[in-house]
Length: 273
Image (cartoon, rainbow, N blue to C red; front, side, top):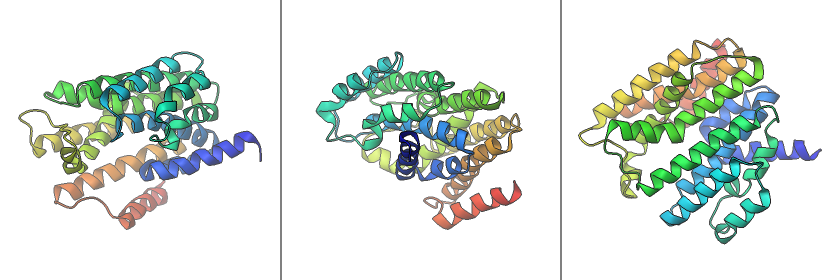
């Protein structure tokens, strides 16, 4: 097996370990898109693990995120990245330590777009670590969800356009990302509160947060109307359907969807595709 094929296999393995939700639609993509979206997702996951780390102090997170952001704005020096992480490598997960590998999996024609979005995300995450994730207004919520999720939408739109010229609305792509993130926030509200993080703006209750999620999931519905490529459409429909069902479960007071329901939702989309 060639180095590239081995690395691709490892990328899919790490993807499966780090994200059940995204692993499913990524696995259904054709080889070129699977390789590209898988690599892009892992790059963003690599920095996400720094932002969310429970043992790293705030100033360390900011330093790592901002330095990674700067490295992504250049050719990306793997040695410099390794030196940057060295003091913390015993704490950081494999997905973060191997950022250079994930960049290597990404096709040359789209790598700059992936690096650009990941760099902006890392810088934005550093800003929010510095702010202690204190969300006071809807503008704060919009800003945070743009960095951690809206940029995923932008990056995917860049990938679709690179792949076969599929043009999508970037604002709707950001809305799609925000919708998925809002559902996650509602699902993880108690966990976040335990670690002293409160993403809900002042004066908002769950009702307003549900509205925020619904408005953005409607933007996601609009986003996918621009897509004709069947494989891309299938990819976009799965996380959206899972988010809507999770929101429905949460509104009934259930914690989240069970695995069987996830599988039946995916099978239903496949059957109708």
